[in-house]
Image 1 (cartoon, helix red, strand yellow):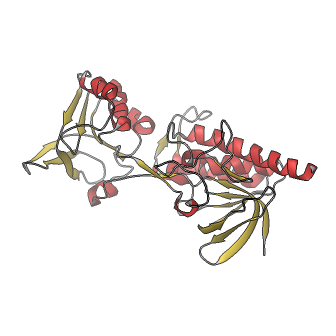
Image 2: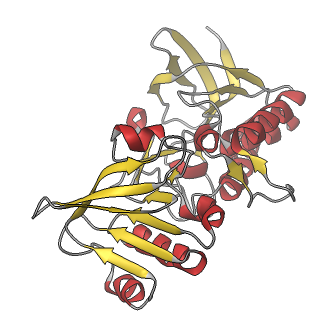
Image 3: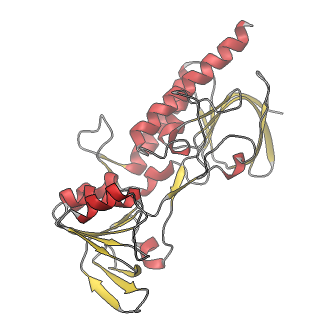
Length: 313
């Protein structure tokens, strides 16, 4: 059976940054890309807020460059999806994982960078226009709609925060709330209600996103009266939450109610020795490429120190 010193699960900014550091530390990392090679950034067109790209970069190109950088130092990148794990509770224990339900691999350390997936409404017009004006990250993509009219779907703190963020750069923000009240904290609700260019529509859902290649408008339906109305917009932001990709770790690793992995203090250590978590899989606060990359670096350093301490015994 193949044994790997450092196995990295996931290939977003966290996974590839972990790989760069692990490879330079001679841990000979192997990265399994998962279902979405390159992670969430591959669904983002322009990335303008990652340091070192003064002209901006498109998400897929940036992930290709990160992969090449990891490979330059000897990382092995494999297409494959980890479907099962058996994690050791012992210090210095060997963890086993199953890839694509067929191949079993042993690993001395594991860095989990499986990320989180934005929840979408799931209607065909929304899925068709992802990257053409439909986005799940206002902080990432709001800038492109400067001086334009946009809409946002959601009723929690994140939606309220993103609505006020968009209101600073867009002429008008229409907020669609499915129920007759918002779930957001009172402070966030006040902030939304006190922002002049945000209009909140309660009991309102998306009926259809209008436009062929790019978003040109939105048809909405009032779920109490069934009345339909249309508004012209160029951007639609979905803020109904994220789901961390942690299902295979349930019962093995400590996670919060939403399924995010819990790490100890300022480290990337999970509750099991030799298992580390980096990126959006353990971060529901910031969820940015640059913070994911930072924790990827931390995870590789934590793994290196863990192996170093074992070797010293």
